[in-house]
Image (cartoon, rainbow, N blue to C red; front, side):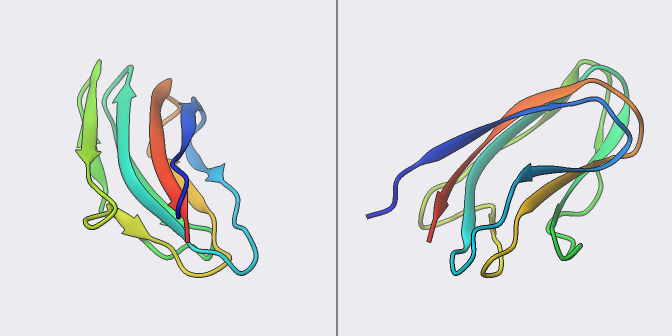
Length: 103
């Protein structure tokens, strides 16, 4: 049985930031996420091997994006041992959360 975990997003620097570190021998399965930005930027998700998990997601000021998946329909399934990163096109306060399970 997989236990649901949640990781807050609180990033304000441009470039790539680690959200969830990889776990040896385990895959991270992202079930849902929500991201809100304070100013217009692009947001993108990558794994720690820099494989692109989403295209650049353009967000307008004080708006964002969300994905409400399920265990049968996840947003992303990362490779074994890889972590999840977020990349911002600008230094903008960005908040939200990522819901995931370890598989």
